[in-house]
Length: 271
Length: 218
Image (cartoon, rainbow over all chains, first blue to last red; front, side, top):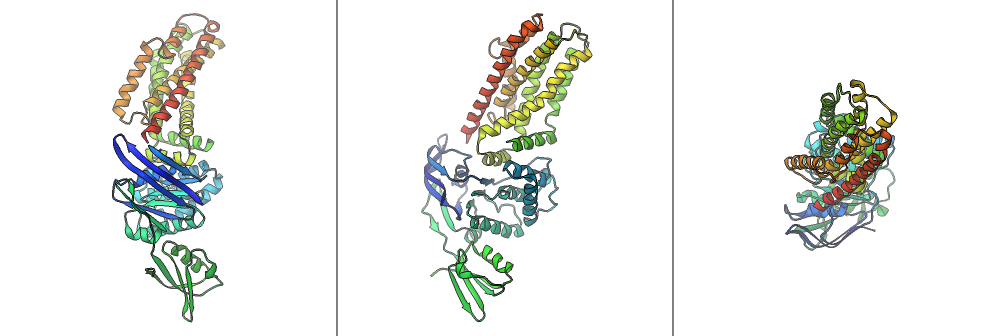
């Protein structure tokens, strides 16, 4: 299902053309990475996707009731604590106070917010504020999740947690779009990569990297019918599962939750 | 929508941005109406002036208090900039209520006046009209429309002077004239109510103009 479509979108600020004739769509379950140099128009595309900006020409069609946005820099001078802030955001989303509180504590715990959930927002470091920004976006499972350089400022542990969260969100049927400069992060997370060059979309390329998981069986788990799995090889030494890079975190989580043991994780090039 | 209102109200309450305009309003009341023994409506005429200045300041403070990044998040959540702006104005109006009460009661407590229910009613309508005009000016001078605070302050000062000096540019000058004409509250009730309604229309127009100008920047 198509969640967002940009048709022949151009964006001008005065005489300066930021985007020119951008055609882009984003499907449910997709993890789209927008890459490009600084000033190439990546953030503008994201703002157009969520409706924060309107195109100078062309159309943006959005088919999502719950839209979440994580800006590139999130600073707050609020005296509210992180948990109180998230509770408010959850209620604005339509969640009950209890659900908003439980969900925010769960997310903050998972993102390992240092200082605890009661730290006032204005005292949070850049990385911790970014974690709160991520948490607000995931309080209510979004149908469209848009993140502007979400890895910036995050510590190494939170990097992998964020990758897991994005993969899970996409698996739940959301369309996820993000910008990122690190090729490694893009390769390990995105299912599709689009490159912008001075406001023009260069030909979109399919993410081709694959990941091979070598696992020792635990409880019953049918990998053949598991979403995203491309190939399953069974040997005496265990089971080898091949799947697109970016979906492997969720598969690993599933394996571990079912008592399987991970022997190795290897990135492979497709034939 | 009430969740957004509660969030904005809590955020403003904790920020204490409302304190300077509130204290200035109290100081203005102390200087302008203490020991006043003329007609109560004339004292309320001074309150209208103080209310206009303080609500303009209050509006700029409250609207500028919201971090631009947080505003983007809120806009995406709500999906309509008009609804977000309307809630912000509702919060500002909420903070105007204590000022209105102070403006109604302070001259009575500290001065010597003959107080009638009619005087209180016309005083409330007049000050409410001034508050709404102040909020309208404050919105158009907020960061949403004028990003540079220095330019915004000068524009707000010029706008306040304009509405005080030019007769039919806003309801403020007619409100002050009606309050000072020494007629009974009954005689002034209709014109002041109409002027308050005109202020409400002015505020609605300012909200729409602010929305359009803020959206255009994106």
